[in-house]
Structure formats: structure tokens, C-alpha cells
Amino acid sequence: MTDNARLAGMRLLVSAGPTFEDIDPVRFLGNRSSGKMGFALAAEAAAMGAQVTLIAGPVALPTPAGVRRIDVRRALEMRTAVLAELPGQDVFVAAAAVADYMPEHTAAQKIKKTGDTLTLVLVKTPDILAEVAGHPERPRCVVGFAAETGDLERYALGKLREKRLDMIAANDVSQPGVGFECDDNALSVFTADARQEIPFGPKSQVARALLVLVADRLDLKL
Ligand code: CTP
Image (tube, rainbow, N blue to C red; front, side, top):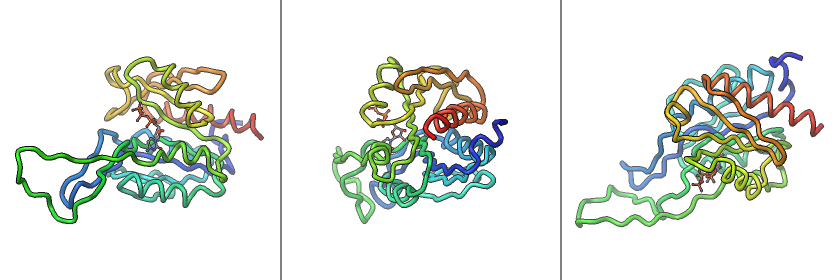
């Protein structure tokens, strides 16, 4: 079988992009995720025959051919959309850079500059990936991402275990040209018993290689 049909008949849910957590009507907390890796995964999975739903944070990227796209803004909206789409999915790939914290309250009016300092109280967002991995409708294969700046293997394996994932794709974002805001990437992919390297290349090529590993895993779990 060529790669082109490796995901035929599979349903794949992908989260992509940053989340924007609103402080007031004109300000938000965001991050530097471009969404390119998640969009590349959605595009390649569709090209490999999967039925793909893409939950996209706020990015201006075009929707890949054959992909169903749902746009969201904040982590809470992303969680709602992911959980609504979960039933019947074979694979969940969490490529989104979900904010870890959000403002406790979003001000209804623009915050005025009254004092010399301003204190924002932030609260943890729900961990969408961990929730999906522990969900009664858990897909057969749950894949997380980890952006690390050192000790890749230790942190990635920690997340794999703690979040009960099948696979985690880690990148070293301290390397120039890798990951955030880039067109290229390189990944170390961990399962409970193996480590595989996806060499540096365009995100489309890296996405395809990761999806081949996912397809191999699905074959094992049939
Ligand atoms: N993730 C998620 N929901 C969150 C936070 C993260 O689904 N609220 C997912 C991301 O999509 C990614 C993985 O979890 O697949 C990243 O794990 P995380 O523990 O958030 O990594 P870091 O933010 O890098 O954690 P730390 O800062 O502790 O290294």
C-alpha cells in the first residue's frame, strides 16, 4: 500500500494554532504558534485518505483541501469543539499551542490605565489532550506534541505517561529553524517502548512521516 491510502477510512481530529485568551475587548494573551504544523498534518492526512476535522485557533491560513475546519479562539472554546467532535474519531492529534493559563475574568469594558502597576490573575486552562486521552470516547490513537528547550526525552516521556498518550512528538525549539513560526521542523517521536527521529524538513514532509507512524500504530491496534 502506498502512503496515499494509508489512512483510508480513518477519522482524524487535529487541533492547531495558538489560543487567544481575552483580557478585555481589545487585549489578549497569545503565543507565537503559526498553526502551520497542525494545518500540514490536516492536509497530509486528507491526502492519505482520512476524513479530517481541524479545530483551528486564530490563524489566517487557508483551509487544506478536503478538510472540515472549525475556528475557535480561546482554550475553553477549543475544548468544547474538540469534545463535540470526539465521538467516532480514530485519531486525535493535539498540535495546538493551547494557552496553559487564561485570565480569571475577561473585563467587559476596556481596562483603563489608572495605576502604575496592573495585576492580572491567571488560572489554568483545562488540558484538552489529557481529557481526550481519558475520555470514554477516547480515539484509538492519541498523539500529543511537546515543545522543549532541553531534556527532550525526559520531559516527553513524562508527558506521554502522565497524559496517557499513545505517542508524543517532541521538538527542540531552542534549535534555530525548528518549530514555532518556521516552515520547517524536526521531531523526536516517542511511544512507551520506542523512539524514532523524523529528520529536519518542510512541515508537510514531517507531517507525512508522523502520520505514517500513526498509521503503523493503528495497524498494530486493529
Ligand atoms: N495541550 C492541550 N490543552 C492544554 C495544554 C496543552 O491540549 N490546555 C496539549 C498541546 O496541544 C500539546 C501538549 O498538550 O499537544 C503540550 O503539553 P503541555 O504539557 O502543555 O506542554 P507545555 O505547555 O510545553 O508544558 P510545560 O510548560 O509544562 O512544558
